[in-house]
Length: 149
Image (cartoon, rainbow, N blue to C red; front, side, top):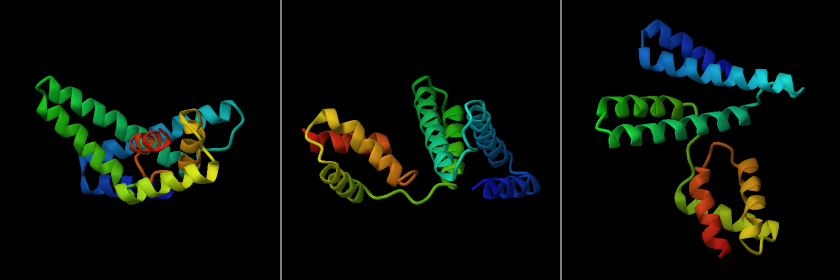
């Protein structure tokens, strides 16, 4: 994943694609920051799964920012955030359709033997472990909550 990011950065620099260059640099910086934090507590460098989690977090941040810009009549800034989201999503695997997410949530609930909402954390941890970057966990959380009621 790191090699892919580095190669995309080189290509974006050659093509003089300012938006893609700045977004990939932001991603690489976030990964490097996590590497440094891990080094401080004696952990290994960031894995591909952790990079996926970083990308998901970056998408969520930009989505929230775009909504705020839209609410405050700043469409040009909202558009910029959405362009960054598109660049970040290009590094992620295809997202699972909603029906498949519901099916996977139900199977995880059965496997873990979850009885109620107090077992929701266990179910979500299992989903995050098995499907990093492949589903929107905020939506999956809502599905799990509905199924556990």
